[in-house]
View 1 (spheres, rainbow, N blue to C red):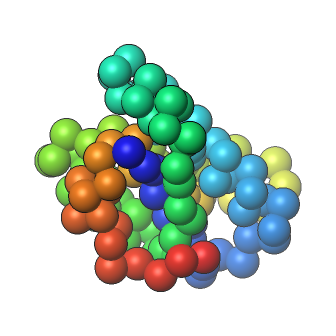
View 2 (view 1 turned 45 degrees about the horizontal axis):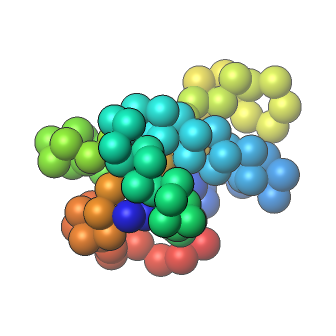
Length: 112
């Protein structure tokens, strides 16, 4: 079990903003998973990777693939209180799910 968080590299988020958006994405996708997946992922150490995303379009496409494969996911939109315009898509979390299911969706992306 793992989770992959894809964060956009094209919008110039600072390190703190990036960390907050990744955290929002991770928790939001976790909350969408069923209780069995939640338990398995928590018991397995909550494995996660952070990957580079190149655009808003890419995150939407990955989310649609995850939806089609029944993998919990969450797109995150910034509230716009600091660095970004309100509604800016910043990150996508895919999973928790079996490693191979997450890899089928995000396996071609580079580590952040």
